[in-house]
Image (cartoon, rainbow, N blue to C red; front, top):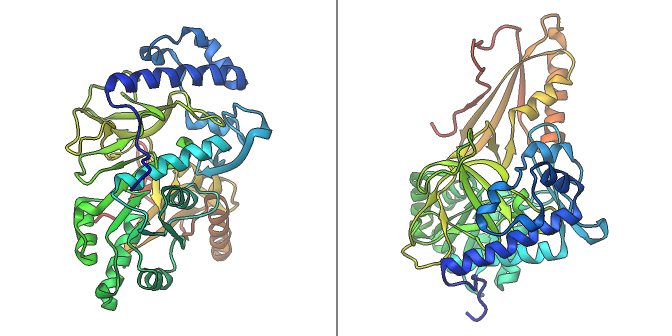
Length: 431
């Protein structure tokens, strides 16, 4: 293979110099381009001239998902509108989605970052990459596809679901790389076995994103598809930080190599916001180094992970963080959509006839996720309208949260009560 997308730096010292240059540029960029950031920096007593070392990052103010909500629809915008060429959006902490704007350079950088994913996974230009993740507002589908095209392989952009088509193209297009969620990979693998078509496919790698998956699940997928478990890769990503494609675990699977030449990653104690020692779990906080449209200064991701010290067996100079262990808040992932209970509450509080008490039940049947929202009828509610109310809530959940679930109206007082924080989400998918 000719062109490489790997970083140019060779040593930790070179990386730190590159990061300092990027940090200075970013602080200067937002100071001049964003009223929001400039006011935050002034309140923190920091100007661009104060950034003289990487340690000065700790002087910078933090940004949270609530800031994105409050600045909707164009949060953190740091360039004039005429420079923006695209938006993407994901779920937010309330009824508002997190919308991020991109310049042409942001899109180009993202393509390069994503091409690096395929290079690290050991792909080549002859690979045929079937993309089975969401398209549209989400960053997933378009990100995977742009990365394939930048890398130089063939993209097969099917999107999520549609299992019959997935299987058909897997055979007819002789797909070699499959990109999807872990649930989708397992479902596809089971279909390959049930249909007896293992000898008709040429799949050799699987890249998984969007949801946690256990080594046992990876092993099962590998067995059914007759590929080495080492060829199942884990890709991180979030809309705020371009989208998926900001790192990948290599074939040794000792952690996620992340693109430290595009962003600085800190792992902090979620309560004290002090740095955690390498190897200890904390909240991932990121600062972009080249992003123009909506840069991030110390953005609190709420994702829990740890820095993995030392050099990977693969020899890459790219540093590593562990797979995400969960979140410091209560978000859950359903069919590749990030959902906060607050979003469901936002739907229910604006629906007549129901109370504030609800439970979300997540189940997995035959490889597919199902969500049931159980909500109590208002004490004075009319039971004869339950069916109508259920349909109303289901439509609003689909429209506002962009996923489908069943709604059951139950009698007032029938759901469990607690003197402490109520448990809202019951996730049975791992049982």
